[in-house]
Length: 331
Ligand code: TRP
Image (cartoon, rainbow, N blue to C red; front, side):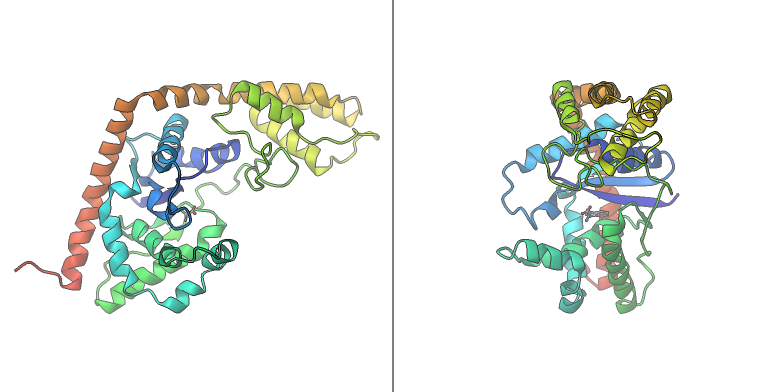
């Protein structure tokens, strides 16, 4: 069975766009592949050296993924900092990562442009740590978006370079993995592209949002003056709301409002009210699980200990072999 590895950023609550995109794919993948999913808390230090609430953020991400259906019995679900072997492999890979290639990484250039006061070595070697995350489990498939392509290419470079240097074929090449071809597009509420893309308060619906917050955000969503001609094409902010309705509502409901729009009879107030109620319904079971799991410390302990044990089993095997290949030996 092929091995999948993916790192989850430890900052940021899940929104509907994450849920209907990456997260549901993870839930399906865990049935078909040997999956390692981890919360990338080492990585977070590259940009947030003293995060106000590191543990709380990690917990929230973990709780939300569990609530969405990640199954710790099927996938290996762990916190990166629970697996020190990753840091050791990162050290070895750093010895063969060149300053020039690291400086050329687009994500590094973006990050130093956005935050010139903290250009640290961890930021520079972020792609090396990511390579260590992947190579430590010999993963070949990495479900990430387009923005991570360059990092994956660097992971292949570092793995291949190790192989060449030590005359082995120890590390496999990891590639970006599109689990589904046609990802559902979840637009934001502000008419500005994908959900989560812009930072606006009301752009995203989070899985942890209460029904009141969901209603408030949806009612505030941008609309226009309404259609004036039959069968008129919808402007982007209206099309976005219809796209969202397609995801959370029944097809009857969708058709009903589609019809009202085409005949210029739509009332956006009613339309948004329906959309909000269907979002509340669609997210209710997850919201309940988030609350239950967050309160269950014993369960979270069990999950993280099991995850760490499984991840370390695989990681320590790799580290022992890598030490042997490099030439560290006991007397
Ligand atoms: N860089 C990834 C992101 O920003 C997170 C990540 C860290 C990752 N290590 C990884 C993803 C290993 C896949 C595999 O989203």
